[in-house]
Length: 129
Image (cartoon, rainbow, N blue to C red; front, side, top):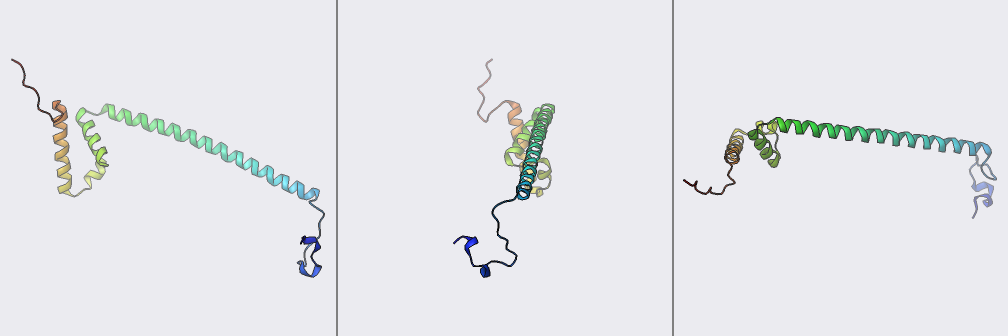
């Protein structure tokens, strides 16, 4: 049943019959649509700016991390790599219980010595005389 064919007593008291949108309604809709389009464009511009900033920050962070790695001694790089593989940072290592920390430090020391000695855990052939 079309709403305009309902008996008047079933319609709300403030209901007005309409033949369709008026020029004023169209203007309001057009203004709302233009505002939404403008806001969407502004949002996309902000997202693009933020994405560019995030990319620049990531490049800067990567560059800084590389520079820190290059400034490390071989032993420091080995230590960093081992802690990273364990999912630990230096700060987290310091907060571990002393007995756990000592075991990790001992393991790191052994690995640093092994790698700096140039062995991969395999026996070295005897030196020729």
